[in-house]
Image (cartoon, rainbow, N blue to C red; front, side, top):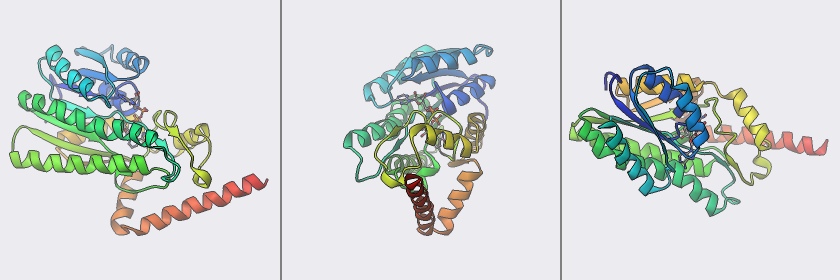
Length: 285
Ligand SMILES: NC(=O)c1ccc[n+]([C@@H]2O[C@H](COP(=O)([O-])OP(=O)(O)OC[C@H]3O[C@@H](n4cnc5c(N)ncnc54)[C@H](O)[C@@H]3O)[C@@H](O)[C@H]2O)c1
């Protein structure tokens, strides 16, 4: 896809963060939008920010974990806009919990949104993207789809799965040599609401703090803004990249994983052990 002008893009999780910034960047390029989220308030805020741009925008209340709702969203988008060229499967949630303590309810909640939501979005929109004559699937994984991290097993499982699913899809689409392509996106830290909206389960002495503390720490260490993430995603689509890494942190961690495919894990363990020492000290004080 060489230009977004006059195209139609559907974005899940468009009420906040990366989804919202990507909607704005697309509208600036003259792309029409079919936006969805479970958060109506967030969607209304996105709509408000899109007011200056003369493009057609529709909004939809869609839970990406609900397969029927996602298929309805795809059909409604085509009915309202006449076509869809781009699906950005972006909606996502976080969960911090050890494997041992994690309830199946929490694990399934995350997989439903972060993994099945991407599968439903891809399969529901794919026939319409082909119909459009110039289509692209963007699936948002994470740098945690490349490295494993303590307390992130469910998130890691979903994001590694999104990577495998999208890489396989891209190969199939290339072999078909048709009009649709696919890109898998791996952001490093992006300053959004994701940490604030995460579920925090039992992390024992691997915990980095309470929810507010973790969210504040996340804001401090996240290197990219949602606007920078949006720019990288759209550049990746235009260049038809298979993989987009966002932020110097993502590039560094990806490199560490390549150079030390298992060694990076020892480095992470050391980091978490140091934190354990710190929290033991704090308890003693
Ligand atoms: N922020 C980061 O550092 C970071 C890093 C790597 C990957 N990501 C991924 O980027 C994507 C966007 O996250 P973000 O950082 O912008 O977070 P965010 O919390 O700001 O936005 C996520 C949006 O998804 C929506 N959402 C949650 N559950 C949903 C559901 N069931 N159905 C539909 N929408 C739902 C939320 O309401 C929210 O508007 C996610 O897939 C996330 O995993 C983020």
